[in-house]
Length: 119
Length: 110
Image (cartoon, each protein chain N blue to C red):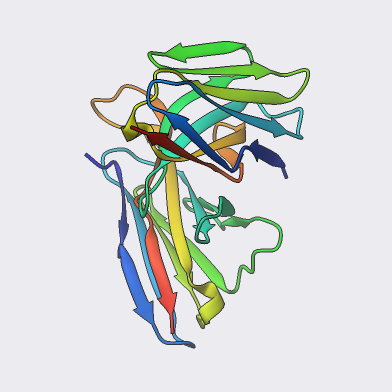
């Protein structure tokens, strides 16, 4: 079963509103999580590193005031897209490194993604 | 940051044939090279990875080779099956932070 979940799986919002996306590690703790965005038929672009208990670190060119990241606990990171515009429409994916119970392998687990459509 | 290039962008093979996808990277400090398979509308799933102290790794029909001197690594899939059809991504960096290539859409024709 899934070891990293995202909620919601898809969301439609109006231009100018804010949208929050949750990323949870289900059976392991993650002090670090990562957020990516993916445009249709393109690669995953690393946006930021979410750090539990401290500020996120953003990749060059990513607006930190636009994409607010909060790592509230060892199993939850949230990405808030503020004042969304149609160009923010994308597939947002998170990942978390850890060892899921029963798997015995330390790896980066990716969530199923959240499709955001801004109208 | 790291710059990862991946080729080809699309690859069609006949069922049973082999498929090879190649990637190059720019940062000589990169020491972790995973390969992911992504199906439409889903998150990527790790299929195999290799670290810089190893030149080759194999897992059943899948193998990866790494040439650190030349900064390139490759994915080899043998005896391809229709269910191997998906988009494959290479990545390079360190275990906690890596950057993806542009992806290869693999189509295995039955």
